[in-house]
Length: 249
Image 1: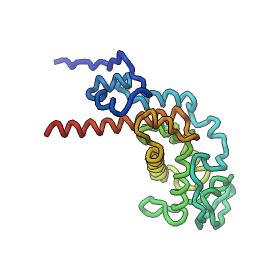
Image 2: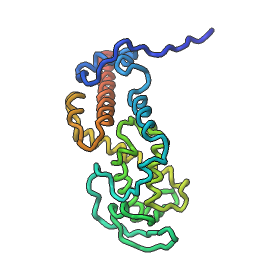
Image 3: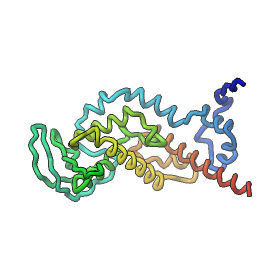
Image 4: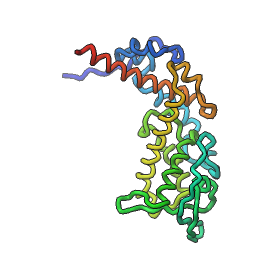
């Protein structure tokens, strides 16, 4: 028995995102075919559109953003915690000093890095671990490196993660970078997720149109539009599941 070849989803009419109200989602998202009417393809709009557009601007890590000195926190981010952490700092000559450092000072460091201590479980500890965690939250606001319109950390392209990892290593020193990378990048992924949740909690409105108009000034318009669309699509899917369960009773 030959398997039937799966044909690509056809979309004779693409519904403009800005014209879709939340009440329309329940009727539009009843079947796979109608989902395709919205997206134009089975592939996620966020993944398809964002990867094509962003990769054209950032095909690798040797672009302008990586030539910057990253001497200040992202302008979109809130003021960093003013508390000082007792940490060891190492310069390019291998000289180590004990200093009291703030998160903002980490950004201004040039040719000097904070030494991060780890326990046997591979977790950052002491003040260096606290400083790293706080600073990663600040890095998550750099939307040039880590746009908010990727629906999942796993969908963020590796070249973007490598850009972020390169910035991290400019500010922090690890005894075994490759061994520590997985934990540090996983933590950064959590910070990015938390950031998107905060944005949505503050700026969401009743409809996609209203939410798009409520865009924070410093967030790029194309990123915000993608982000809003993905949020309302997720909400519609959840509502549809609730209706199906109710109808099944």
